[in-house]
Image (cartoon, rainbow, N blue to C red; front, side, top):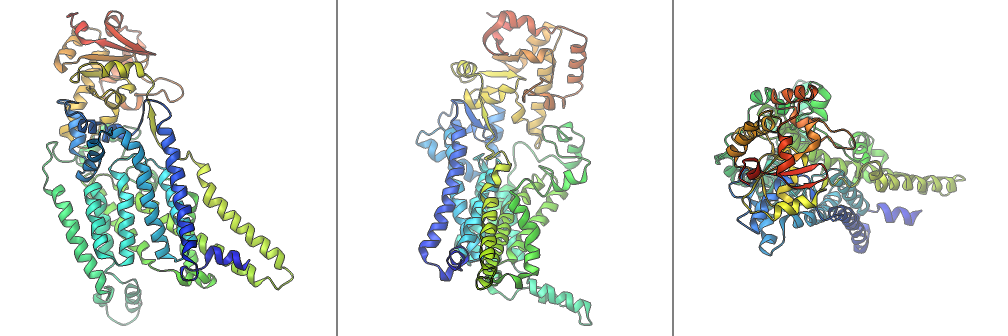
Length: 594
């Protein structure tokens, strides 16, 4: 029992370096296992792409061939909103001939390994016990892989290693690496620089001083604001230098005049069906809990491992009763939980007040909760295991010694099961890979000239830019309504496409083809009899098309009346390719040129 106790919870100063290396190696092993699990799904078929990569990576194929996506407003827009560090990072392997979409599949594992090393280091800074490093990094990895942020390989994937590096060097008191982390965050995921800056400001306030001020206010002594501030000179140096770097790195985003205009205002967004409940970019809901607490874009929390939830609930309890936990004397830097928490909440509410100028409010709390709840859970479990083993040691000489040892070992095994097996409760890892189902059509479009334009309302059209490297007129995945100079023309294109596809007049179809210079028109024949297709996830456009009224309302009325749409005539004589329910029509045939 003594050996087990020492192996699991002995402080860092009392264990050999090899033991620390063992726990770090075990942490990295789990990170590799999670990464390989995701990578395996990424190569399960020839045509597989990560869901968000279809938006934020597809255009990077221009790095390999600059002639791709000529005059394509969708590719131009997503290229314009890519942070410079993120775009440059993908350019490096592209210079070596590596396809960005291929690199996108390997990138998450590398980022996960870096995040694991820093998470292990942060854990040891909070509680210098190697087991704490393992549990903290493992639970954090589980939190990362139960969501599809890290696996996306997009700009927000980089926030984890950058932010964890910032926290680690901040706790270690390493100024230059800390500033470098802020700089990198600004180049890759600039929104999170606000959290970093807020954390540095919060470190100027002394928790002990605030407590003393509360006692003085309750008594007869006057209020002295200076007692709020820390006397730690290093905190002021870090804050001043950090804010300077944050200002420099964020300044280009502030003064940059986007060709797509300013971000949509909250007042205008409230009038748009795109932001209503169950819409493409759903934001505004009447339910308080769904909006403020669990909203994907507006709330504070999202899904985490059970141990993270345990940590949030039990860490305050453990700290109140810390005298009952001998290892609690080793705890350090716990103020970072409060500092990051307050900074996150401040920016979260600022994002709500300035909606949508700071983009989505949830981005400022969900990630920090995801990270620090893992450390909180690790602290709680490590203290509980240490207390249980210590209790069993003290019972060794008593008649109940054998039973005590058995209970302690069972307690350790229980928490080991919780830590290691929690992912079994979820779809894990959550990779959100999209598998292309019509390779014949991808190959057909890829063989066409690079300047073709494909029009379609079918779900499959979202995959064409990634799998065929060809431009599309509209697509659900690309219909982001946050900047109206970009979105208004797309909305108009969508409405025009709906009117044309479900028209009763052949001239409407020809006018549409001429107006937008369409080369091919892909039709899902199922959509000619129903807007929503039933069964097994095959509801490709129902939630999206219902945003476009009155066009879609008129379509449904015509369907109920049993009307036959003119496009069906063209299907019979202009089809040049087909697969399953999808048919591709030649625009030149529609115009009578062939």
